[in-house]
Length: 390
Image 1 (tube, one colour):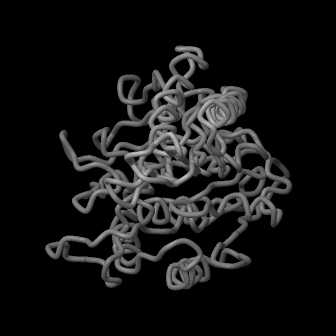
Image 2 (cartoon, helix red, strand yellow):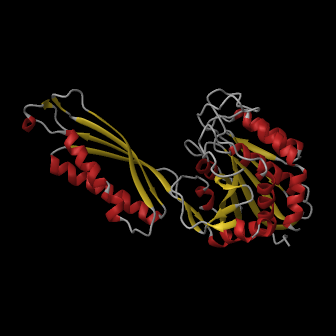
Image 3 (spheres, helix red, strand yellow):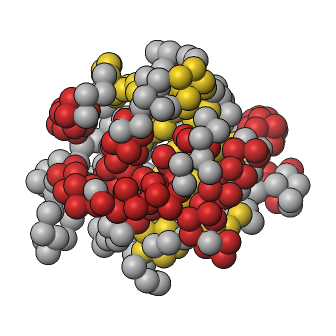
């Protein structure tokens, strides 16, 4: 099978893909509340006669091939964002205050189209195709509980995509190794002793301690991490104090820690704890630290990232499928699927032109011309892994 043939077949069903995408766009739902979305996807799978199972709000479907071979999984995320959509969209969200502003409606439509293309060839398939429709990517993460439920058992390779408005339609990228950083939350409470502001020596000033702590924490990345390894610690909120003439006894600080390397991630956590403990002793205060584990870093299998670029270039041309120079520090819980099987995550250009509104924006308006491109490449990756692509 030739990828250009796949693209032609995908173009032939583009009106159906557009209708599917717009129907999903009208029913955006948050993590583990994707009940209407799940029902819509199930109806589409029923129409394609693809068997599936459900648990919570996710769906796992399976296309059984006619010949033995690997099981290749494709993943599409399902949830939306708490953003109010502009009123001028002709297929505007029917759930006020919610919007598919990250393109997950595109991901689901592309996955259904890939399923349709591959299902039509199921008797010839040298292996099986597993379709993972995942909830809660934007919130608590649906990939980890899906993995715990066994959805990756027997999977030999897994692929996923994300539409990206920094690239125009007809472009794609990925990279071997880390594509997305880990995402941990940092929560700190500095506790001092309250007192009169005119007699500071009788109290322990939590604000002064917190100020020193913020300054010292900014050295965690600049002085504890190699400048060749991407990492960032950003403190987004600080709250403390009750009155201008009272020594503050409590300050809360909240932030996020991102890292591209798992070992660096662990080292930075250790350094944050050491700084908190040391400064607490120096100031005579108490510093409580909680680091909430977020998504793991997304690490593409090098050979599978190379497969993505090779397949994409065969459709888009060498100049339109590129290797990213550096990873993104944005989170992506596709990482948990990649911990279970070789695979790759890649980006699909979706902008009609540049500049384009970014992801997570109420003005995000991806171009539907990218739909058949995404469906063709995802299908081609499956066939290439099965050694069926020309």
